[in-house]
Length: 167
Image (cartoon, rainbow, N blue to C red; front, side, top):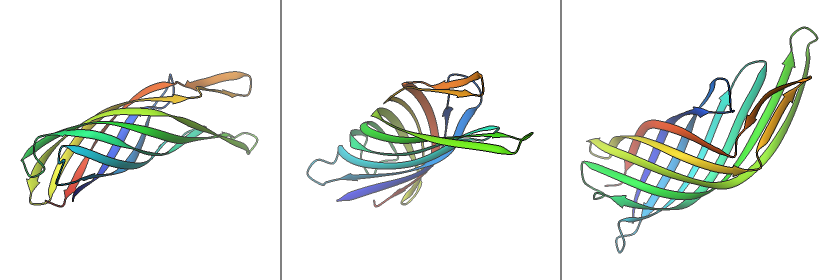
């Protein structure tokens, strides 16, 4: 049994307008010796977008994928599909009145990712990736009388970080 663990920074649009969300992810892969190019994976992530309307995304996912390139080769790439859960927490604050309100929404769906890794030294490499995520329900956010944005049902993100390997 071989494994990889990724620790990466994550960036992508949080809403249909405004600043990107920034965060981190931890992702683990396992592969058996019998089918080394087939992967099982689990991922945890957190991202936020601070401001008067503060947004935070907590997520967990699991799935399967295929690896191109050997486990012990200098370069490899993975194409993965995951079932995803996300909890979006929204907090609106009014500095003039000091009032603050918060709410959350759970979302479910799937994620497709492509990641590529380059070995630096034994058991350590760099990994970069891109993903597309489809989650339901779509979330419209309104603060006061105005619309603040929408968490769209389909979004994308980019990641870069370190990969720790058992081989």
